[in-house]
Length: 104
Image 1 (spheres, rainbow, N blue to C red):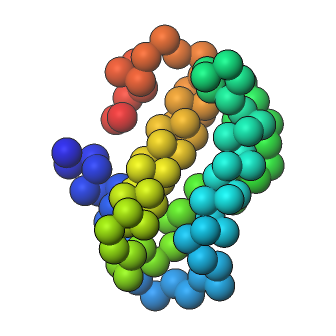
Image 2: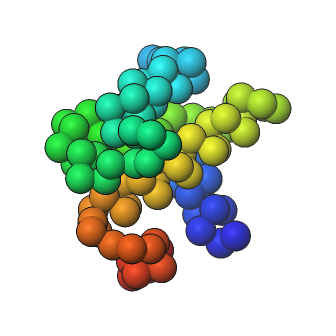
């Protein structure tokens, strides 16, 4: 739970102005996922090969989700968390479990 709160804090840093909508961000996430997911499995070896991965993580961090409500807030939170996990596992790849990653 502490990690989830920390993630939301990191993704809600104020002072950033992002000229994109939530739908734009989610569309970019869909594009990335279509490249790295095959047969319901994440191909972690491809994550860091995609130059847009780190940029997308950065966009999530800068996106001001404080104004989001309801399903939009849930969609943002779920996607932000999932992208965070994918990027952390890819950084440590190959691993069998996220529990093998220190400070995860």
